Amino acid sequence: MKHTKADDIDGWLIIDKPQGMTSTQVVGKTRYLMHANKNGHTGTLDPFATGVLPIAFGEATKLVPYVTEGKKEYEFVVKWGEQTSTDDIEGEVVATCDKIPDRAEIMAAIPHFIGKIKQIPPIYSAIKINGQQAYKLARKGQSVDMPEREIEIYNLELLEERPDSAKFRVGCSKGTYVRTLGHDLAVFLGTVGHLSELRRTKCGNFTSDNKILLDSLEKMEYVEERRKSLLPMETSLRDIAEIAVSAQDAIKLSHGQGLSPKAYADFPQGSMLKAMFADCLIALLRVDEHKISPIRVFQNNIKKEIKDVD
Image (cartoon, rainbow, N blue to C red; front, side, top):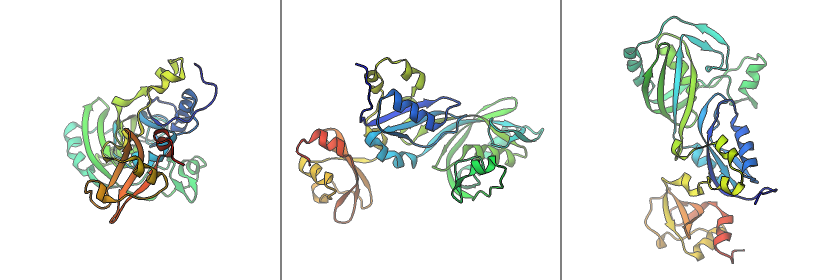
């Protein structure tokens, strides 16, 4: 059966974003291919970047902040000797240098970029300055003063040396600009550089193992076949403890009411839980001092499983 109208569907689609598309374009394309009413992405990827781009559908959009806050992992290539206006292949060359760092120099530099470090984001970014996106101001030739921010690099390793470049893998926190990391690394090594390749391999709990190509999705004739690629909403919450709730407690949660901690295991105050009923995610909870409170409730799932919910 071919669908002619959009439907309410819930879950995650992990797209391997192709080079040249914006994250917003991928959202629009997948909404069309899945005949879905509502979707959105987590963690914008630059048009020249590729890799893991989680797309949330329906109720899963409520979980976008929890994926965005998670650890990211990238593989990237720094081309030594040329600095560009955007710190990647899309900008114009603005400075050059003959120095190409060797392996020993690179290995000695890496420890200086691990842990909590300061970054000044690139002016060609979506960060808002006085209500306007920085890249729009930069394109108008206006001076842009980017505020410094603290980010965290969990790991940084050299994967491969090439004649005029080097390939790295980095694990980092939300808000990290890998373009800036490549720029700063080059400067530390006494040269200049820009990213010639950038690929995200992990975003929160989603990795390259979960991905599907847009081309593969387009080649599927029927919507039902495409929707088989959807992952359950709770896939994004694998590292959060789970409790199975009764039908009565599921109804309480649907009304925004808290649960008594006495009926469930003793969890530390302030921790988060996912509430499951009939193997279906129905709420995201926080453990308070005297109750377990809902912070996100998935009404569609509750209504699907419990027919007498108002």
